[in-house]
Amino acid sequence: MKKKSDDSSYWGKSLRALPWDKKEKTHSQTLISSTVHEWYDAKHRETSFEEIELINSIIINSCPYCGSARFIKAGHNGLLQRYKCSECDCRFSALTNTIFDSKKIPISEWIEYLMHLFEFHSIVTSARDNRNAEKTGKYWLVKVFEVLKDVQKDVKLKGRVCFDEMFFPVIKREEVLKDGKKLRGISRNKIAVACAFDEHGNILLISENTSKPSIKSTWAAMGNHIEEKSTLVHDGDNSHSILIEKLKLISEVHETKETKGLSDKENPLDPINDIHSLARRFMREHGGYDRSNLQDWMNLIWFILSEPKNRYEKIEKFINMAINTPARVKYRDVFHKKRVK
Image (cartoon, rainbow, N blue to C red; front, side):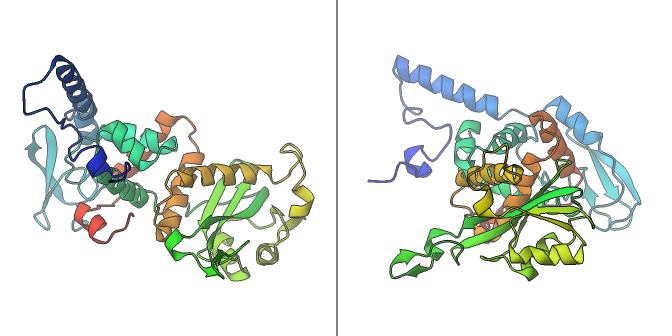
């Protein structure tokens, strides 16, 4: 018996195909069929006038192929403005070399996809709701990762900074066992992520690419992201000492044994614990994720938890970032390299 979670067998190969589409239908089958097709058409609208206006309003500063500022308008593709470079002779549009390059699906379809992603839906459930193939959701996720690649690069925490690591499990097939049992505590079966939060509401989530944080990994993750002479609120782990020493931080230690029995209101590290909880909840929805992409996931969680809080403003911010970020991602490259598992 095939597993229920196998989309190709359980849900059918086509997202709009029904088993009775090519034969005479009963009245109930006709109702189901017309409703499903109506759902599909509603989710897959044609490129709207508003989208064309958005694309044509994008200011072009240079050719995406050679970087020259010498280019001219060169007609339209439908209603979309095209350009021609006077240096390399290449033709391009405002979306060339972005994640929307050579798009077959309108940008408007990204709105619901992003809303689901920001609301902690899994790729699988989002794909079903949007009437997209699961592979489309995975492909778009890689595009999201590309847009957010350097999103935390300039984050600088200051003032009162809470800092504590959180840990994510390695994928099950890579677990190390001892006498047939999982290793306990912080072990090679965990991946550490440096997590920090300051009094101004800024957060930072950086994978340390190691199981147990060290002075070296902590400095690499956090050294450029905390302002000198800030106050570091932490659990006293030895790996944090490098930050205190090099950045001349004021150390405020609250050991785990001290905070364990405290209520959230009394716990100085509670803001960090909230971030840990939300991050773990998000990753549980994507349990089969590729651990080599862990920093990409942390960038996404950072974006979700950071300003703006309003979901529609956040979607607008992402779309504007995507339009202005050189990040073309080809479908065949994603699945040939198996970047998303």
